[in-house]
Amino acid sequence: MSDAGMIRKIGTMIRDARKRAEMTQGELGSAIGISAPALCDLEGGKRASTPAPEEMVRIHDALHDPKLLQEYCNGCPVRKRIIIRKFKPLNNILPGSHIAIMKVNQKLVEASERLSLMLPKMLKAGFINDPDFREYCDEAVLRIIDSKRGYEELLDRMIEEGLLTHERLQLLVELQQRQCVEKGHHIESEA
Image (tube, rainbow, N blue to C red; front, top):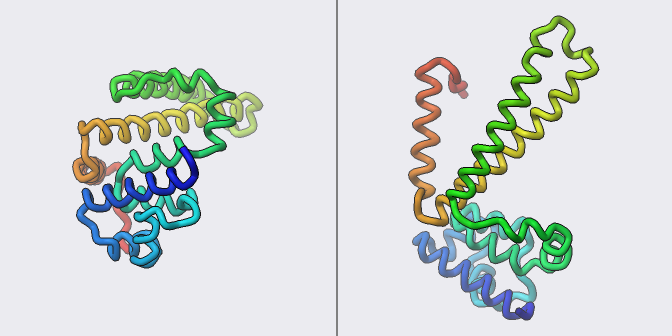
């Protein structure tokens, strides 16, 4: 697709997502830090280029539409020329939340195993000076980060497939926080 075609496609997708979110151009413009006329130009494909990555993330965050970022990334020449060619196995990842669930489960098991190896080290006096501790800690943290990325991907896929909405996710986050407070695990700070 030509640059002009990609600019128009992204603009149209932003406009359609904005309308689905029932936002005016002024409301979305305020949320992302641009004027309504500038947003009008963006939606109409009248810009010289697609939005900068940071701007596209702000648009996504305001509209909660993962397809915007996916299409934006699909049009990225760096992704097309380097990432896809260099890491071909990534192209074979099957879509669907059921696949993401299996991957998140696997990542959580690996993280749990690494944490189980780290815990006995931490129970010893002076564990921070144990030469193996840093290795155990690093391996555990790497698995935790991998798990976090996995569950973020899972939530995005569930939203994309209509299994979950942003509103429902927010309600569940708030419910989980209330449960933690009730159990005394987390106490909200008073500002």
